[in-house]
Length: 359
Image (cartoon, rainbow, N blue to C red):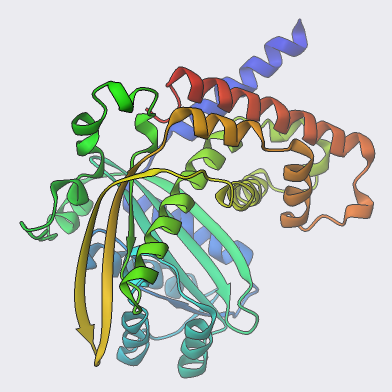
């Protein structure tokens, strides 16, 4: 009985912690602390503009984080030159997804002498957003760290977001993705559709329109995987797992979420594309396409996908992502992790089935 009460208290505390949000400036202070803790002293770091709803918000995050790291004097901040910004602009998909390919990372490192490039994205709407930052090695293209935080809008952030100038020719659902829900979820063929699985995929990678449409679908799958992984990770009682006794809780949680996301994203089922919208432009003589897709996922398909997640396979992925030598993991420690993952998977299935998860 005491064990059950203790577990309930742990889960309640975890739920409260994950519900907390902070202002943008508070989040940037947290990002600075994480970066300084992860990188060796003196590391040469370049912070790229964050992919955000507005250019002003993306530039503000990069400039403020650069300033905080510079003043901390633990890492060396590389100047954000016009040539570097042009390299990222050419990689047009970055402006909305926050993803940069290995060649671009290495090109940036060659031009600036940076050893680590920090990229990121801001997603969300209303008064709640999610800031994600990634640290990538220029030399090996290895992901060195992944930090994220929930951000509550304030005066500063609202002012930066207000500079957005959406085209009146675009469909309304691009500006407010979830506003299209009532248009489609009206019963009949839409019955059993989870509102949580409406989303918008974006790609304006410099390539053909068809390839950009493919990228848009992949972006949607990534977002869905991240949402499921985040919800599952929030319910894992890390403090009870001996496998993480020597790890920091925050670092372990980040690695678990990353491993779960990678395990899930290739399994996201097919969906119905409700609407497409394509924009075309030309930069430096190269055509580019910006593709938006509004989709919906039948709840039964999502349930089937989550039910098929194997706790043992997820445990192996987490152990690998955490950098824990497989030979040092005892059978009992792995069994604890597998059991925990099985419980949170079953919990997620129940929440999706009831329609509560993600509302």
